[in-house]
Length: 247
Ligand code: ADP
Ligand code: MG
Image (cartoon, rainbow, N blue to C red):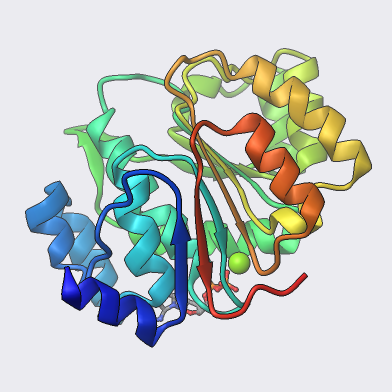
């Protein structure tokens, strides 16, 4: 416990909320504490991700405990893997549920693409059963059209990364079933939640009907509107601030 306090001090971590788990000191801690899939650990090592960054030390245990998270850490501090590693583990754990289990919403296409590239690294050689690889998709214009025309079955994907507009369009035309989604991640929440998206987010949340929906927001800053939205849509969220909170 003393170690955790020291660790938090070293990266100016400010964690608030109820029943906060201890941070991890290494990715290997995830094997003993959460039975992390060895293939995930191997993919991290193969991509030279050897030590978790501060936001990863704090977010990974929280997410793996199924907690809602409002996280703030500077640009370039590894927020993407902070939400992807637990998400991949949880999708592996939920392998018997066919269909979309994880949804990541990003404010821009460029950012969505960057997240997708990190997913490609993490999902290497990961199969949910003998014949079925863990399937991640970037919701491009063409994929969107194929889902609408039923050329592709939406149950094919375990995880989808999208911008708000593409997602709303698909949800409205009932071409994407969100009823099995258990993990909803809002990346760059400070850029995502403008006026129009606040209303759209309601439609998305209403379509995610699974009772165990876990939500997380990651951002470089937490403006007051994001804080308000987080408190209104999340259940006992834990606030994780790394470094200084900018407004
Ligand atoms: P943020 O979203 O906080 O701005 P990113 O998730 O884009 O940051 O990460 C920034 C860079 O750091 C990326 O190139 C990513 O691959 C790298 N990175 C993330 N986690 C680690 C880690 N644990 N060890 C080494 N590099 C990492
Ligand atoms: Mg980022």
